[in-house]
Length: 369
Image (cartoon, rainbow, N blue to C red; front, side, top):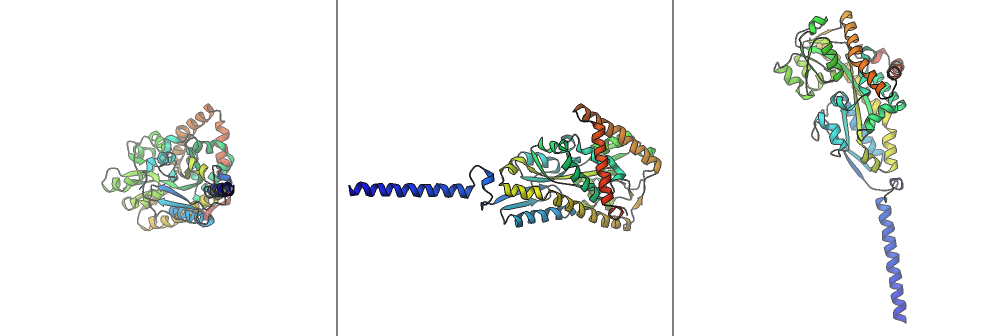
């Protein structure tokens, strides 16, 4: 009888021990519900791919953001950024991130022309966008107010965690100044943005596609002696050392974004999701501010280097803006209408948001002040 009682005590003790171990396991792993894991000590190590160099102005903002996420999460959210395309080349960054080859990415809309139907129209506002600060603020406001823009990232399997503007798209050449439409006829010009390519074709030029990393080499080897690309590329690739003329007209403004694999985001505990969500505006504006300040300084270097910096001829500007409307804006509005979105209202929302942001960030922030 004593032996039976003893065995029952042992069995009960073992059962209680197993219950305790099981309960501890659920607490340590967070179970299947991420909302219960806010107090967990689990560490999430994420990788971020950036095709450009670690020396760019926005790279500094990305590094600061990663450090902030680690600090505010008490070391539970660590983001390791790989620059220089070590994980994915520029044209593959979005696909690699969506497929899980990286957890986050920084990329641009022009490099992913085929993936976006709506957001690229932002770049066509030309001279209305004259600094990265107001352009970034406008992008933030548009994303806060327009689900159609967010939807473009949702469809790619990405969670947008930051968005910012880069610098103007500048028309540069070895020794040629573009002062009339005749100067474009038959001229081979390197370009990336689909909008720029459409305008160049309308002006009679022959656009030549290019990877950002090939810009300097194409100039130095005389593969091509003119280009219309984001002005920051002239600095980051040192291609400005190969050009002799620089037009200050803003042919378009590059939109950049920081995005996370949606599945990775969904797997995070709620407190870490909130940390990322709450940093959307500060991350975006910090990128915009660093880009803007850096470019203003770079313009001084360009002018001091002996490059012929000139403003666009008014007649040519009128023709360029006419081409933007006919070759880019009108087809875009048609696509919107076909998708059940009022193209005119959508376009006007972009315009009104840009105008409001410009009032907040005025002449002191202008690229060519």
